[in-house]
Image (tube, rainbow, N blue to C red; front, side):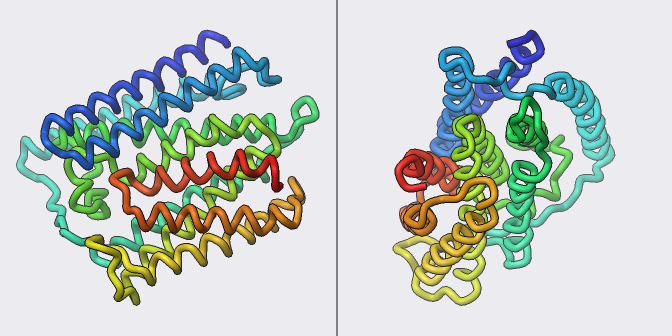
Length: 331
């Protein structure tokens, strides 16, 4: 591991500690749900970083660098460019406060449908990760995935840095938060100390890539299958539940109609993505159907339990972990 990689690793650990700090700050303010959600996000990021580091040192992987090779210099450059630019946006917000020209953003107890649609459409950005995995790679030392694996981690890594930086400001000093319009797509419980869904999604994607991406080709196939099923299952469950759902699940705002719609769509999307990825890995007939079925059941179970933890994290992390180990027997 070179010096740049150590700096980048230290930076991610520093951000993990800030995540932990905000989690316990939420606890001190009596926000139990925010504490649980934030704590799990922080622990998932720390664990995935540490395990990836352990794999690098103890299992002697063929990859010469940690996380961003050959993009370590690019990531350092991104950090050096991003922070001055973001600071300018913060200074602009401070001037607005001084001149009393704050942006008025309405907060709703339940998001209007159009904002919920905007919120769910942002999840489709994750499909770009899948596209990058299997289309932008080229052979380095005879291994196409060698390049694309690190390219994906680089792209998700810089996204996570940018999103976390903005989220820290939103929570710790909301007056100078430069992206106040984003608050319009946050639910009421996410407006205070709780991390937004985009943070849980980013940490979920980043962690499973670090944990399973090096085990090829099964790792990337499971990652892409998981992400696809989680995205479309979540979108279907939420939007269909809101539009036609009538049977409420316990005392939640979810419906059985949305729950079953999410399971059906996640299963269908799992089948489709495995078909599209057959040129990279051709699963057995058993695995071809069993993986989507198990994935849909897991997504349905998590959705039904309605945990305090954001499902953008639990869908990706729990689903990929279970499917990864099962895949060795059925794919």
